[in-house]
Image (cartoon, rainbow, N blue to C red; front, side, top):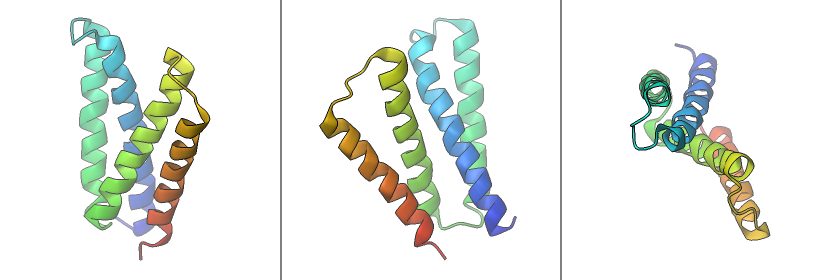
Length: 109
């Protein structure tokens, strides 16, 4: 897999991580079938794509970006979907997380 495709794969893996993280909220402790199936499928797909991307990219970078995309996306969607806190301090640290993700991308050969 080329480096470009590895990055595309990694971003998709990160987006799927957002899906399963948010999906957890809807599973009600895995007692609701449809959200549970969705969550499990997106979890497996996300980890599979992370594994594929890490064949080409350094694991520290790949994992850091994957976690960062998932954490940032889940936090933003938590604010939007679940009325979680959106204080200036929280937004500031989410912006720092975004900067860290971009920094990892820019500093990887």
